[in-house]
Image (cartoon, rainbow, N blue to C red; front, side, top):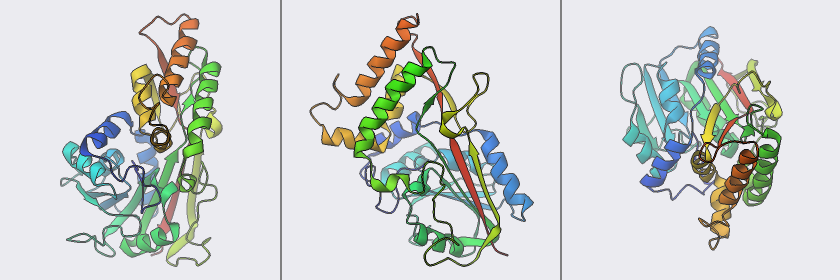
Length: 314
């Protein structure tokens, strides 16, 4: 999962190994159904499950999950701290240990020794990271490293939405919206590249200077639980989790806008006036008003999600 890319999102550039470990613990993975959709699309359109390249891999969660379908897998991220965390956790593809290295969306491993070779990759994936990409540079790099008939799969989740099964869920959602409004004042302008459902994400053929080599006819875009809508008896498709108060705090601490809020408000960061602490205390009160016992406060939450898939021409 992504941390930041190519200098547009620098919040995590200085992450230490320990911070990378915290990020890995707090950030959940994705459902296997997502990876099945990706691999089915890839193979049904002529791709093979040879080598995966996950760019913006963060601590390597999606690299490990999707890499289990491939003979080989490479996870790349510009953050040395994230890559250190990914290496400490490790992981294997079908035939070998996953390679984790420091590289950007415009390089896709060309800076490494040995480099990621041109025409060597079957599928390029990015979980959340494309919102930070220099898309012109990325598409050019993807065209270079992909084999003919290879696939690019880009997906992202929204900020958390509260599931209707959570007691007093509408009030919890309102408290979460207040938190989002506050921390979004500190967001990087590049962090919503393409919109929450990638409706405006530049594609190879929509660039001012189009990038040749991709097949527009086979383009696929899927959206799930748009605007957080989910029936009370169903789960969020992309990611569905139950969080206690500590889990909420850990997750929210990994959001880049939270980190920037704390950088801008050092006197409040980590105290009872911290923006995340204020939110969790509100949630605690709201849940206890719904007769949830002290110490048993939990929220069920998930994300709306979008997946774009693009084929390199044969």
